[in-house]
Length: 70
Image 1 (cartoon, helix red, strand yellow):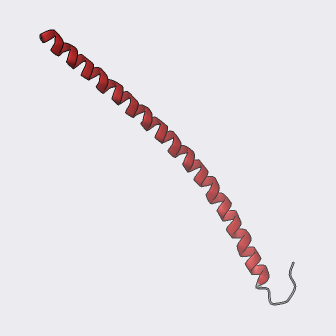
Image 2: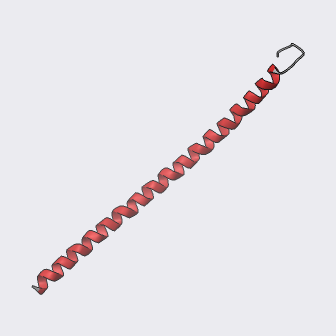
Image 3: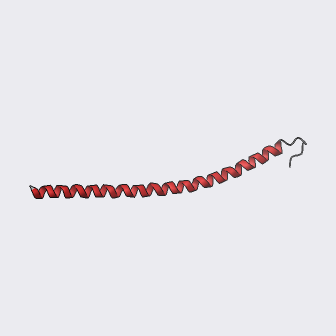
């Protein structure tokens, strides 16, 4: 009976370690995905800034009251 109890504890401990390793691997995967999305967000923010500048220039060109468009 004692041997069975020790084996049961050893199996439960191994399952806990396996689950812990799986959680740590998932954390690493999520952190990498987050880092990738931050890089993509930065690129998109830069592109958005460029587009906003172009729109502002076009608005300024269209607001020109002299009647001459570039």
